Image 1 (spheres, one colour):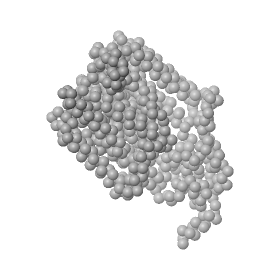
Image 2 (tube, rainbow, N blue to C red):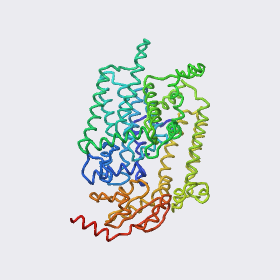
Image 3 (cartoon, rainbow, N blue to C red):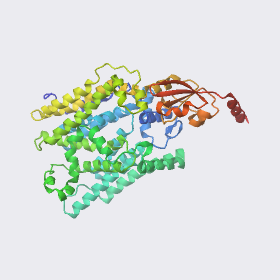
Image 4 (cartoon, rainbow, N blue to C red):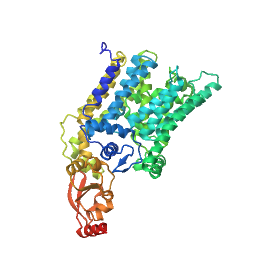
Length: 574
């Protein structure tokens, strides 16, 4: 591998396509987010209304339209399917890795640019997000470009860079909402404060955060943000906009959708999920606390003197803004902290680049952490297939009726899927053995092995996991597709019935009301699906009859009440 020149943008683009495209549509979309977003795009195509974001052909105020436009365009090309729903994130995956390469080349050199792209490609959750159908890869990319433009502006035209920063922050708003301008603005505010302190201490300023440039950014981002707000109000009315603001408040102040977690949740998610960059970038991440540590442990702070180039400060600010803000927010979901992957990957690449040049020494604690977290991940990845292949051995230890029933699904295993976790830990050990004598080879082994693990695991294991968790109910919805019937989940919220049943436009609104479907004058054959741990409340309902129980789901059919139907028809005629 020494003689292979990888520091080339075409190589990066090829790697991105090779890792992200295959098997993209092999697995059903996952409930909620993937199916939710794909359904909004599908309903744009069905209704022909591309300004209003809809679910169940009703205004959906939780998300702006930009990502759904991309999905709808993809569905126009590839059809309404899983591949099309996920393909926009393949595109932004290529853009992201190439951006890292060219920005890294501009900051340092081509080798650093390639290294930055490689560490992102070869880390667990950053890699997986580009094979998903969720909004965050595009959302994060726009916010990152905003931060890059105002923290590393074009020296020949600084005003243009701040204009671009505002545009990209605005595009982030159109992708996922006001947080898209909030995160870059908090980073900009932190950099401005640091600049003021530097000026006060007669130090060289970190950037040109003049009133003029700040106004350019604020006006541009503001126009985009207000434009999005006006678009919602004009298309769907004030009520929808107010509902969106209330939704934002619930996310910040309450544990929306049972996603309440402890304050440290995102730190654990990033440490485990972003392996290996979470370990390698850790020492640079901690530099932000050097002034605080110096007050209590000066000897420790002295050891934290590291060669940090100017661009590191905006990246540190970005990392800590994301981690602190979303740790404070009450609703905590894994992808809320995914913006932290961008600065973390830069700091990890910087560490490795300086280590390759001999400017810093690899510490023993980092080796221990790579081994420890790598072992935990490998163990989990090994156990998941073993549990699937031997459910009866693990069921006695599972205290969840729904999960136990899920494991009864007839999923076929080849029998060797557990080896991926073992092989991955072996690759980590090989990389660490070569760490001192063959540094570049060790880096490539570590990060390419992670990429290969994610590639083969998503191809061979994830479809089987989906077979346990949701395939039974999705197969039922697909079997009813095109029939003049009602299908609906009862006792839990889901979006699968919309996308996989392909619910048509114009169905009466009562067909989305659980109470009406259970007790009202239904006018079509009606099928209701409950989770096994929530089905007991419906078994005794005299209006429904039990059909079957399968792999954690209980299927009911509504008994038609012809008298109520006749009365309903008479009222409609009157």
